[in-house]
Length: 95
Image (cartoon, rainbow, N blue to C red; front, side, top):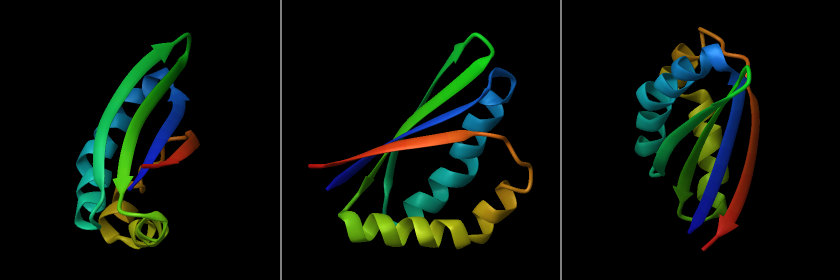
């Protein structure tokens, strides 16, 4: 199993919208691709918002294939029509 820990940084004013987009659009698409999402957890620092979540994949191939399919999914493409500027980082662990 692969655990992917993802961190998104954005303006504090955009944090609630970013978390809502994850719950409403990203989680259903990822679930349909066989991934499990845990989170999001959020915190606000001076002027900056941070959102964290974990995605569990079966293996590296599943993760790579899943993100490619995710990026092409019409539900996700529609959700991104309202852009939210973010900086994304991730760590990947094998279990």
